[in-house]
Image (cartoon, rainbow over all chains, first blue to last red; front, side, top):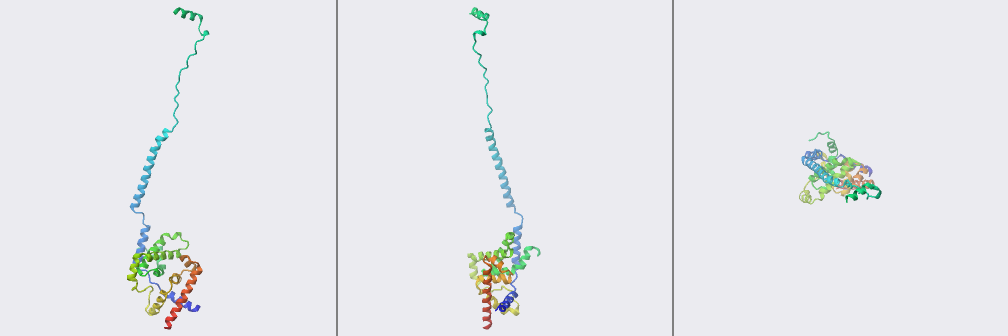
Length: 106
Length: 164
């Protein structure tokens, strides 16, 4: 039985499947050439548009963030310098002569 | 046309005829089988680097493409109208062996699909049972037993043919 199957196997192997047609090989060649070709201009245009859009968005965001960051900066404290009020006069501050002159002026 | 030394061309020269025979499994017309080989081979070539074993992967790609084509409604209509009358010129046919070869082809076409694909991969594709199992997603032992059943049935049918 094994010999019979071996013989059959050999007989099958001796049969040659038909070769591929030239047209089929050319179709495969075209498909592979298309797959390995550099990207077409619509692809490049798409990439360029996405890149330009990203840059524009970055600029807009930067412009929006700048005033906000300035508003958030700590305000410089404005301190009013009020001149100190003079101490009320005390009895010892004036000489007797000055007091006498004042009374005279009155 | 690319140079014949292209690696893809070497693959196609070596495995193309067996792949076409393999694709005929699910294709009623030779045109369908050629479409399957085209689609499957291109898919294989683009993605082969990720395959663990390339030859079983090539067969798996062609099988998947052939089954997809076979399932399409449009193709079904074509099959119904054209497939019935199309002869099965799947092998080169030297005149002195024409009669015997026709008998063998008829016996092959009578095999169940899961057995015939194993026979094609083993005899004409040169795959091992391990590679066949890998391509079909079945254990090695299953691939081997399908082959044995197929050969036994072929031997039976051919001996009956000779006897008659």
